[in-house]
Image 1: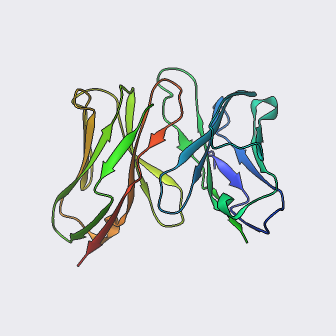
Image 2: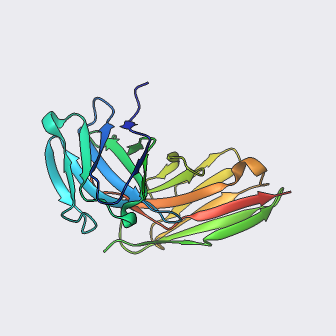
Length: 115
Length: 110
């Protein structure tokens, strides 16, 4: 399978715990995006990487959230001291370079439940 | 700030009927996307519209784009139960992140 993959697919955690999600983009794609989707809403942008550089962060990304993309390959999104309001689906998408590579391809998502 | 509005947000259709979902966006964008999402699942790409007057069709779904009016429509022809899902439109410029609408939850009933 050469699509975007995410791990884990589901995570249940207690409030106050830290969680980390992983995203593996399509191999030739240098741009990687993280989105968050809460129930009944559209996805909202969190952060964006071009290669290993984090180019943009949303105001939604509080200081409890951190994302990395070492060596421009896979990316991790960590949430520290989780809160119930962090419960959501976390979606990763990747995009290639060049004018014809405009489409973002989404992974299956990681559903986080904070109890 | 780029904003996207969809309407209606909820749509209950009878099988065999036609209907249209509307997507308005606030400022000039390069591309307009339509996605389908089934409950608990990720996003499935339906259409990408690049230029004014673009029209794309796949099965019972047809999408069009009017960049002057900043409006896209998703037309459903002769709805069937399998089309029940949430449909999102989204726009972007260059390599910016996608900005999504709130989605239209479509329910097709017999």
